[in-house]
Image 1: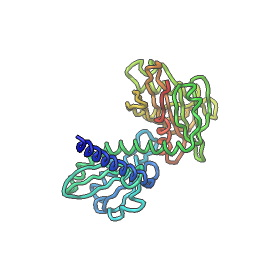
Image 2: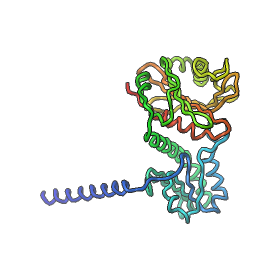
Image 3: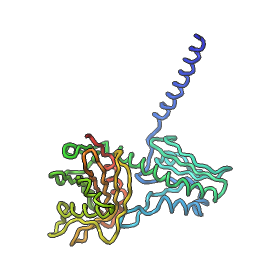
Image 4: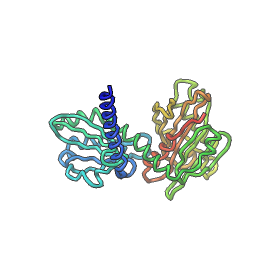
Length: 327
């Protein structure tokens, strides 16, 4: 029995040391690099310039839903296999395409740097690779978007604005990034705004009874009517008789998602000022809070005329998705 106990102790010690070694190796990894929503594609030129490259661009650089101008889902940076070293190897998001004896897909986290997401797609020929791409692209896109939200939140954590007023009024916490200021605070309504040279980002926080959104099955119409009512009451332009509405010319996109472990309606579309020419994209998260008999509304909208808006909206989503219910 003593011998068995000793062998068990040795085995457990070995496993413990092995796990510790893994953790230590992970701890000494250098920080990954790359701008938000940038993806490094490791693929030889002959494949990049053919069917496989076309498929990658079609999937990973597809237009983002809800933006007024066409912008790609991700910025793609292509590198031949022979240069997959140095700063490229430390990219945060990496997709490797390679020809081999078998087709397959492997996803690895924090291999050469951290945080890092590496997806390897292989196949014996072009047809094989295209088949794996078709099957695995949605999974890769979902993974990259989720990790980029976390990366954006991590960057914002370095200098947060106090959310004390949000906590007091709505019973939730929110990671509010640097530069946002309380533009309007009144009964059950908060407007946060960050101004920059070419425009501004805004976040609205308010709540409505569950019946406001669920009074019938036409959820998108109910959310649109709610937005327009809130805009008329609170979001006005500098000219008289102007207020924010949902742009009628473009139907918003509606998705069912999960935020803070709660059923959520995500609406993406374009806002405009009635009787004026200002416009831009918005994202509206209607989070069902059955415990408190309400929908908590967290909306972000941006104004950045004639310039890119994708990453501005993504920043708003990173802030909104940080919400935690305190009661």
